[in-house]
Length: 119
Image (tube, rainbow, N blue to C red; front, top):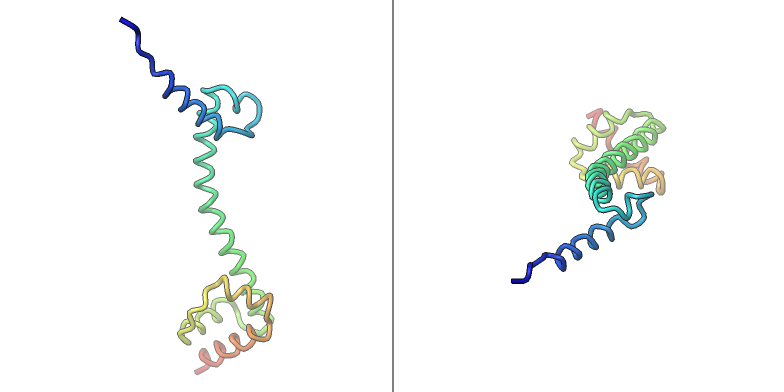
């Protein structure tokens, strides 16, 4: 009786793994065991860094809004509190874009938030 191997499926699995490792440095791109380890850690870092990138963007937006609101004489926390009391639902991303691209519109928003805090 002929011995049955799993060679077609195994080769397909190996090729799929090595294709994902294209561009890796040294033996990590063409040796199965090293490629597997490298790919697993690369995918783990990929997941982690996707989450970190969102955090870094939010920090950037907060910094931009803070600087722009300081120019108009109010701190970031008081500005955001004023917006919350106004019921304004503009997110931080759009606020930072306004601060950069349309300073006059941002100034009006800051003025409205200041008035709401004073009242």
